[in-house]
Image (tube, rainbow, N blue to C red):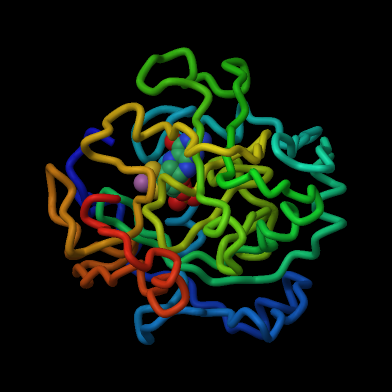
Length: 299
Ligand SMILES: Nc1nc2c(c(=O)[nH]1)N[C@H]1C(S)=C(S)[C@@H](COP(=O)(O)O)O[C@H]1N2
Ligand SMILES: [Mo]
């Protein structure tokens, strides 16, 4: 992420985002009401929770497999990426490894709507009405062994479908990781759609991770492998620039990026900056995961 944060050109700002009435949206999307256990909007805040427009969410993307500028994923990903057939392999330290066909995943784990704030490390943000299911549901099916302490994720490696992989801007495939307790947390989801539609290619079709209290790069797109492991797995941006991007990468306005402040963010579609909240506003739900840790050291 070489560019300076938050330089959203005026020409890229949509004057008005589309506000969809929740009931109309749910009806149109055919999505069932969300379980009472996980509130739809499990975040402190209020007025700034209006979903970002579909147009902004799908035309301002980081997906380096399709180029490094914000518009190239929307242009290139739909041309090259084939979301079907697709399979996701769950393996490693589990009793029941399995290769899931994506349609089996969609059928087995009913999608629920969750509006989450996404905070890119570059200091822009979006509010996204995802559809998907808790990652814990898929992990439980695999029956993790007691030695499993982390979960490693891998994006598809196929330069024919992902032409950006012909450039050595990052090591490929893109990889990410979570501690097992982070992965099992009820806020952590696998998304298969947004705005009630299947996930657009540029947003990580057909299935991507969403970890709302962490910087956006943790939310790995177009996943083909989920591996339970004993040791902290390597992660792409940490390999690329270890002094800038840590393994945890919890959203933290008190810890600046070496090259810019993380205190504020610009919401796509907005003119003014908002303060960035600790853990991206999900502090009450997730701070307990990091008790006793120095989050300036474990950034
Ligand atoms: N495979 C892969 N996943 C990725 C990225 C990427 O380049 N490749 N970019 C990350 C970054 S930096 C962000 S901010 C989010 C952006 O998701 P969005 O384009 O749906 O907003 O995806 C993350 N997941
Ligand atoms: Mo990002």
